[in-house]
Image (tube, rainbow, N blue to C red; front, top):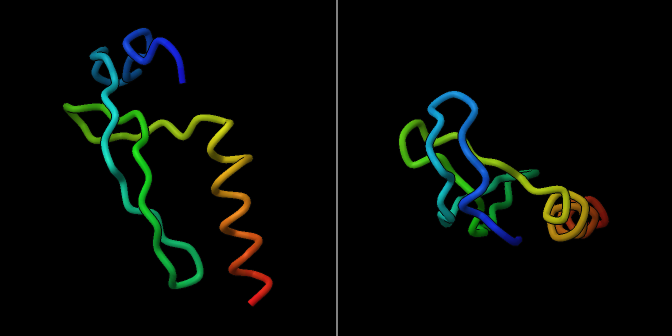
Length: 64
């Protein structure tokens, strides 16, 4: 992801920061650093992550 400092939280109007975040799906969990608002904690899931890594993990878990 480029130019993370350009992304701001829509609610708080502060720049997002990368933060390791825990995700759960089908009783499994994984963590990944995602842009997060340091004030309210909202996260932004970039399309590359949603369509890439997250989709891959989802497919692997559903195949089991």
